[in-house]
Length: 535
Image: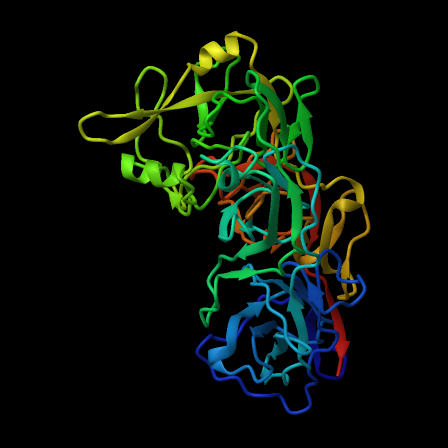
């Protein structure tokens, strides 16, 4: 028709070579260029250091039918160094569904490369892109009341290790899933002035990864220790128990309750005994009558409490051990507390069991309509005269404590991922086949499979993405996409789609991990375009 051979070239072709077919290089094909890692936008300044798993993009290759991508811990890309690989990628970009550990090298510890598949063979591999995944900062101390330790949250952290550097010549560390911890190790059974005074401690961020790496890289990595912080603690005052406040990413008081994105710590003042055996327990309720407990604290000697991932403080269980502790022995282990009872004599085990599946956080509740209530009660030591078994029983019922006016309140609402305006980050191909991130705040138009990215939120260890054909009502189409990272490649048919994203709280049980949904955003996916080219 044109007098010469003509071919139709699709900008987006849904052809891929069989997986088993050996790759062979096309003679004059050039390797992909422009490979880079990014967190939110493909056009953001090139960086080689990230606090969390980045996404990747590169310039599209003419006549490419798909792409192959590899991520490794060596620039040689040998099989035992591969962390993740993918074939058949339709977009010149990808999201890596693996929460990478914090890992650094000189200059880099992680390497990525890509090549294009053509109708007949492949291009050479691109130049390597080297990068590190590392903490961006170390925790800094934040103000906290007597009995509590508090620090700045770290981007990319899934928990924190708190190190009691010197507890009267003894050292111990424990783990929490929030940015506060209590001083039970210093106070318990030793709350007099000769024991409670200068507290020295450090904290570091922990990153527990999930998603399956090919070569089995370690799943838990650590940030740098903070400097040694010095906190001056004081014995509880000789007065009735008085509630203080709630502390985490924000601070609430009895007069001005706060809504928290992270699990808060609880503080109070007052001393129940005068012999150094001061013990307390905090309760959290879903009702203001304090009848339905949703969180039972462990028995602590500190005038504060925060749930620990490593378990409750192991208490003396017989008179011999109790005698040793009262004589000056240090409380050295976290785990199970044994027999702890409520005021009516029923077993009252704490949420802190040391089991990784234990629930150490609270459900989202609409604020201020949905409120949590809390109190703290005195705990007494009981001794069986025959068996010499030591037990611990609440000296008063928390319902009575609340009725007497000793009741605080707070809110728990997880952060919603911001997707308003230009906070909707969508990367894909333009009409001309150029890799780009949309800067249109309403109904961005992409061709092919778009890659969406988002900002992380406090307390999220993973994320869930849903698609819908409509905004109102939003009705999820297909299965939700679960990912440990802050990006995902969508692959719906051309047309107008709506999506939303929320974080997943790994401290909650299955079925209750979902956090607040983002606002619903729209993305339009154009149909493949064709043009006639002579050759």
